[in-house]
Each structure stands twice: as C-alpha cells, then as structure tokens.
Image (cartoon, rainbow, N blue to C red):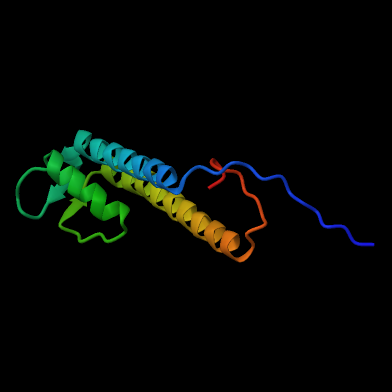
Length: 123
C-alpha cells in the first residue's frame, strides 16, 4: 500500500514584497559600497583627471558590482585595492550566489508546485 506524503505548506510572501525586499538589499549594498569608495577616494584615480567625488564613487560601485569594470576609475592605493579584492569581490560572489539560488528555487517551484520552501531567509 502506498501513501502520499504531504509536506506542510508555509505562507509565502507576496511576490511584490519579495521583489521590494531584494531591491532594498541591493540598494543598501550599492550605497554601502559607494560610501566605502568615497571614504577612501584618495586611493582611486579617475582618468578624467578630476578627483573622485560621491557621484564618481556611486558610478564606480555600480560598474564594479555589476562586474562590468570599464577601467575609467581605478584603485591605486594598497588600501583601495585590498578593499576591492576582499570587499567588493566578496559582495559580487555573494550576490551572484543569492541570485542563482533564487532562480533555482523558482525553477524547482515551477516544475514541482507541490514542494514547499521557507518563505524567506534561505534564498
């Protein structure tokens, strides 16, 4: 005799709320990265010849976190390079891992709608 196992279902947050939370997290990471670059602005070189102001820091953080890296603003001091290696690279890897986990979760949920996942926190 076979029995069907039913997993408990948790209440899942509305999709718009999940998107807003993820957007807020992304904006926080972007703002924090821009602030860190701005604090150490003397450790960066802008090819335009100007100093690095907050707008340049925000631009650099956006370009760097998106892994584009145009090279027009570059870290030149050891502190700026270490921040880039250990700070921004870590954030990029963590963000990519979260995004891949979220996409994998969506694929599994679409293929097996009977499965239940925690509503938040795991991805």
